[in-house]
Length: 310
Image (tube, rainbow, N blue to C red; front, side, top):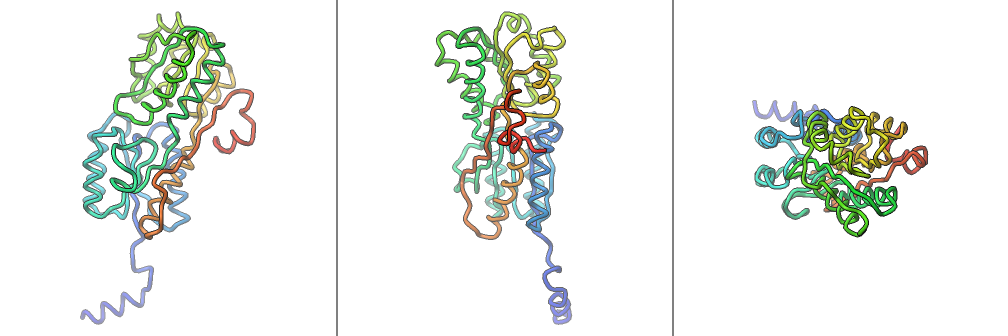
């Protein structure tokens, strides 16, 4: 009986073996950013002949659900995990568990506390600190180095946006003529929560000359609050991420500049890196997927188009 089973398996050849299954776990699944990551991840999967299992929280504030998703994929024995951690500390134990089960983990988008190449295979992301610096430098330029500025942060524990906020504030502190009047308020994971947070700051915003927001939800929420109060286009506003809605607002003059990432490239390279791990090929422990400052003046240039896509 065993002999016949062996012969049948050999007769089927390579198709008898299931393709590698790579779990890709984003912070959330609703923002345009994550849909672009999914596009890149699935493109890499199709090119490399691996199955992409895409699953994550609906909103970017459900740490418990994301931990559960990681644990679920570890238990099911996936080949590799590609993870954008919602919290740089809370996801350490689930990642450690994956490693103990000999499942390589590639961290992408937002850092996890630990050492790439040791605690996880690689970190694939925007240089988020540099992105914050780009946004800060542009806002300082727009203000002529003088004025009051409001920073609406994203969420505690999110390493990517913390790095952007830190880079932005470093630039502000280099300009003695600029005063940051708000730097301790958080917009949260949804456009609605960010709009509410911005509305609660509206007196500070009316008194400000410039605004910075570090991700898609805070930028969209701030935009809606400015439009609701008639302040859109009346304050210098630099945001982060480049959804079609935000690019349209840039074109209208409601936003002055956006720091754009390349989420499609990020998803693609994260999966490519995971496949290299599975095939025992050397991988870079840190991969910068790039970012660019987008303004109305450079929106149609080749360099910006290469990041934003068609």
